[in-house]
Amino acid sequence: MSELDRWQAYWSRQSVPGHREESEAHYRALAEELRLLLIGLPTGAVLEMGCGNGALYPHLGFDRAARYRGLDISASMLEVFRARHPGADIAEGSAHTYRDAGGWDVIFSNGMVQYLDAGMFRAHLANAAAMLNQGGALVMGSVLWRCMRYDLTVGDMRREGLSLPVGLAKWLKRVLWRDSLGHWHSWRGVRAQARAAGLEASFYGSMLYPYRFHAVLRKP
Ligand SMILES: C[S@@+](CC[C@H](N)C(=O)[O-])C[C@H]1O[C@@H](n2cnc3c(N)ncnc32)[C@H](O)[C@@H]1O
Image (cartoon, rainbow, N blue to C red; front, side):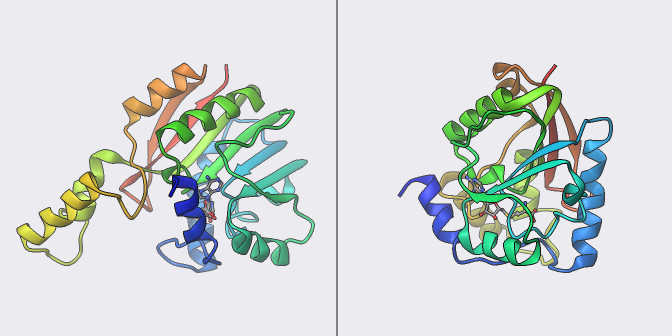
C-alpha cells in the first residue's frame, strides 16, 4: 500500500481534523498562533494544502482572501467544508502532485506534511516553489519535530508515567516501524530541502503543540 493510499484510507473515514480539542475556542487559539507566521507576507492569493473540514478557514482569515483554493485528499472532510462554507473553492487532490498556473502569495498547510513520505515531500516543495509568487512563502504549520519524538512517546511530554521497558518498546516501534502519527522532520533536513527548491527557511516552535514546529519557506 502506498503512503498516499494509507492516509487516504484513514482520512476518508474522518470528518474532524483530530486536533487536541475539537472546539471553536481551540481552533481560534491555534489559528491565532498560526497567523503570526503570515505577518509581513502578502496574503491576497492563498492556496491551502490539506484544508480539511475548514475548521481553521474563517479563523485564519482565508475567507477574506481575494483568491483562495483549498485542497485535500479526503472527500469526507471536504464535504463538511463545503456544507459550512458553500462559496469556497475547494477540490480533491494531493499536495505532492498538485500543480496549477500559480500566482500564489502563500501556500499554506497545517498538520499535513506528516502524511508525505520523503519523495512526496520533495515533490511538494518543488511544486510549491514553482507556483509561488516572488516574495511569497510556503508556510508549513505544525510539522512533527523529530527531536521531540522521544519526549512525546516516553519522556517529559507524557502525563502518565510509562514503565521504561513499555515506553522504550513504544518508542522503538515508532522509530523502526510505521509511526502512527506519520513522518517527523528536523530543521536541518527541511532547510536543506528548501534550499534545493530555491526557498529560504525560517523556523518557529509551536506553543500549543510543543512537539511540533512551523516552517516558513520564502521565495526570494
Ligand atoms: C490533521 S488534518 C488538518 C486539517 C486542517 N489543516 C486543520 O488544521 O484543521 C490533516 C489533513 O490533511 C489531509 N491530507 C493528508 N494527506 C494529504 C495530502 N497528501 N494532500 C492533501 N491533503 C492531505 C487530510 O485529509 C486531513 O484533512
